Length: 340
Ligand code: 5MM
Image 1: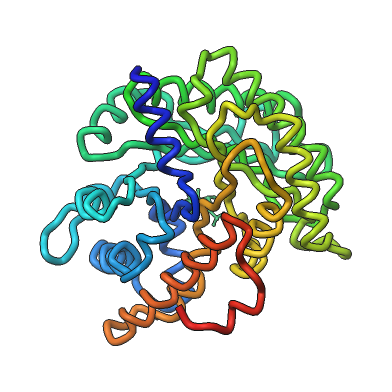
Image 2: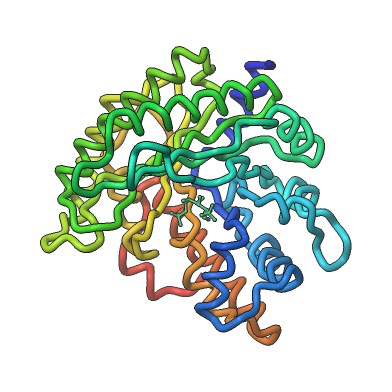
């Protein structure tokens, strides 16, 4: 492990004014996204869509890195440049999702464990050869009656830490993503209580697995009310609660925190990030690693039609720019009406 190189990459991923695009939708998830615009999920459509995002003029000013999927890291732009090389030339760091998904946790109804550790060392070596310099692994913790259990929290934290150690062994910066879902009708207080446990378990396992904190990025959920909650907490409350929890658990040695959007609307996710950064100074960079909150409006603007390729790019670059501003606390809701 080259510690200074890992730290250099991690700092690049959370460079000021920039954040990450999560474009690592697995085949099932991208099909759902395409179903919404009535587009078949063929390999060529998936390639075209990713090319639309990656080549969007101006987006590189706000995008530090892109999380790719196994199929995408092997695809090329229409003029034949492999995506990782294309991104690297633009100064965007290519990353790769390496988990194999959340599967039912035996003996614990309603809970999951993320799989993918077997053979991971060999896959990391291959991905590094293909140009990936960081990776992502997502643990999923659901909130419902009687769950999560402490056992499921610990099992997922353990897997995250084993993954992170393997990444660093192979010169790849791990994004550690323990996601507490915002599905359901739970309160913001319940989200805080569960996220507290999840981050405590995660950092304990990272320590025990000798993970080099300076060479990782945390990708957490925000502390937020469930989507179906009756009285959802206000944006300022979300910002304050999220910072309170992160300050309890994330050592300043970690260079940055890049949030998932988790089902928030695009504007909500941008506003929350900006409000948090306005509450600085903070011990770590605080930025985005959004999937849906960066892509939802762009995929709709594109609609799968070649004639709308540029419109989709413009919308993606606009959202990236607004989130880039939010990552330094300079976003204001009235910017939504302005063009990119
Ligand atoms: C882009 O979505 C990612 C892939 O999900 P699947 O493995 O289910 O296809 C997802 O892991 C994503 O990176 C994070 O959850 C953040 O995305 P959101 O949409 O929550 O910002």
